[in-house]
Structure formats: structure tokens, C-alpha cells
Length: 399
Ligand SMILES: NC(=O)c1ccc[n+]([C@@H]2O[C@H](COP(=O)([O-])OP(=O)(O)OC[C@H]3O[C@@H](n4cnc5c(N)ncnc54)[C@H](OP(=O)(O)O)[C@@H]3O)[C@@H](O)[C@H]2O)c1
Image (cartoon, rainbow, N blue to C red; front, top):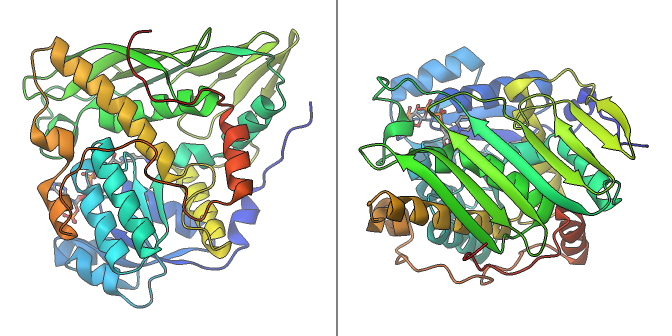
């Protein structure tokens, strides 16, 4: 079986893009480290709520300029692109800041705290003609280019089943952790399950039904759930997410002629066990990049899309981010109903700050109102092929 080959050296060959990083926390550090270590890109500006934190980050990572506000970093004329690395609750607001400044923006996952907010920012990007992309970095890892090809070629036969599990234990007494905070957009749904739900979209496309069971903390964020999803007849998937336990990060996809199983945590650069017609082989990307080194692939892909004049990612456009958020909205609604916790206005419509930045009122998301800006016929075709998703529609009731 011929599969694509990868070489990390190619990551260093492109033009040197100049990035601003907003909100210098843990993931911003990992992003900057791998960009500087593994690509031709540079983080040239950092914006923090605190000038001291911005300075400390800049000095630690060799970033030219530090700013004590997000606005100032975005306004830096030498910045080509912006990376939003704040807690979930502020993604939309900071994405709008970049859009308003006319800067292409890569927004940490989840793009927004719900579908309405995600759609609002997607619309703003389209209206302004500014590139917008969710940092669903796993999608850009070599293993998913390979799996995409395997699915396109129908190597596994008719695919019927997929599963994906994401779980990292968070100490219960770590009460300051953003994952426990409703105000910061905590919970396993927004923080972890997006990877698993994305994986099932990658394999099957839009679910036709979802059923979830799980638990909430006393403050009303979900700490664990399992979801069963249907994608039309005889296509099913399970997704689990937990901060009560750490799990194997297992993901797999099974067809009538074979299967692909991730040997390592599927979210990170991972080996795969590929079985076709009874023959099993192990695949490794061969680049030596491990863990969050892999964040570099999405940045290099985004630069390529910008150089092609696109306004969205061809393999994970905003319509995908919105559709995934819709599924997650449904999961959250079911979890809250089962646990006697109705969703409040913040959970349903996103942060007031995100609404106020552009003076747009919160609107319920109307499916299919966000076309694939900048996505020509080629993009549409590759999307259909890459997601292997013949099942359109957005109904989410009754498996
Ligand atoms: N791709 C991945 O593998 C991955 C992994 C972890 C996290 N993430 C995502 O990355 C985002 C950030 O996560 P993280 O773990 O890096 O968080 P973190 O370490 O807590 O850093 C977040 C930063 O956001 C800024 N911030 C702005 N408003 C804040 C507020 N009200 N409270 C706290 N911090 C605030 C802070 O920087 P300043 O105050 O200095 O501006 C803080 O350092 C989340 O959306 C998460 O889902 C992605």
C-alpha cells in the first residue's frame, strides 16, 4: 500500500511568516517553541493583559516586541498573522479583534463556546474578507493526511464504526484550573471532546443523531461524558471525554475490509496500526516530531492557504467548526437536561464581550448560512473526499 511520506525539513522551507501571539499561557508557549524550532516562521509580537507577562514571554522565547494589551499586538504593522491562545470564553472576542484589524487569525480550539458564537465570527471574517481558521491542529498532522487517503481510496471497504476517546485527569482540588470554570468556558465538552467529535466528522461527516450521558460539576461544567452518534444507516461512532481520569487517547475506524487504530494518543503525532484484508502494518510519520511539536503543521498549512489567496482552510473550513459546535451544543443540552441544569444565556449565545466588539446581537445559528468563502470547486471536492461524508443534514434526534 503506497502512502504519502513526510519530512519535517519541508516545514522550514517556506516564507518566514511573522506572528503575533495573544494570551501567553501554556499553549502559546508550546506554539511559539515549535514554530521557532521547527519552521521558518517567527513569533514577532506577544500581547498580554499584563506588560510584565508579555515581557517575560518575549524574553523567554526571543520574541521581538511585547505589548501589555491584545489590541496593541494586533495593531503591530509587522505582524502577518495572529494566534489566539486565550481561554475558550475569549476566543470569539479576540478573533474579532484580529478580523477588525484585517489580520488573518488562527483561533485555538474550540473556536467558540457554541455554534452561534462560532457562526458570528465566521460571518465577520467573511464580511471583512479576512482569513479565519480554527486551530484544530490534529487535522493537519501527517497521520490524518494518510488516513484521509486511505478513506478516499476505500481501502477499508465500507466504513461502519469509529471511536475516539480523550481524557486527562485534572486534580479535583485544582480549583483555579480553567477547566473547572464556567466563566472561562471550562468543561470537557469544549476542551477535550472537540477532538473526538472532530474525528467522527473526519470519518463520517455530519451526524444524523446523537445521544449523550455524563456528569456535571457543582458549578455546572461537564467533567465526563460519553456520546453515541449515528451518521445514517449502519454508520455509528462513540466519543468519550473525561477530566476525572486519563485514558489511552484511543481512536479507531473500522470497515468491511480493514481498520486503522491509533497506537498513541490520536490527538498528537501518532503511529497507526493499519489492517487491510487481514494484513497488518504499522505506520509512523518518520519526522521525529512528538507531542505539541505537532502544532507547527497547522501554522505552516495556514501560511500555504494564505499564499494561495484563500479565506478559510480547505480541509477544515468554518462550516465544519460551526457544524461541530452544533453537535456539541446538542450534547451539552442533553447533559444539562439530564443533570437538572438548564443552559443559561451565556452558554447558549456566547460571551457578551464577543457580541459587543462588533456590535452584533446574539443570533441563533441558522445552518448553511455560512458558505465556504474562498473555497472553490477544488475545495468542495476535497472536502467531500477527505471527510468521506456522504451524510448531509443536521438532525440530532433519535439514534
Ligand atoms: N491545541 C492544544 O493541544 C491545546 C492544549 C491546551 C490548551 N489549548 C487551548 O488553548 C487555550 C488556552 O489554554 P492554556 O492551557 O494555554 O491556558 P492558560 O495556560 O491558562 O493560558 C491562557 C492565557 O489566557 C490569558 N487570559 C485572558 N483572559 C484570561 C482570564 N480571564 N483568565 C485567565 N487567563 C486569561 C492569560 O494570559 P494574559 O493574561 O497574560 O494575557 C493566560 O496566560 C484554550 O482555549 C485551550 O482549549 C489547546
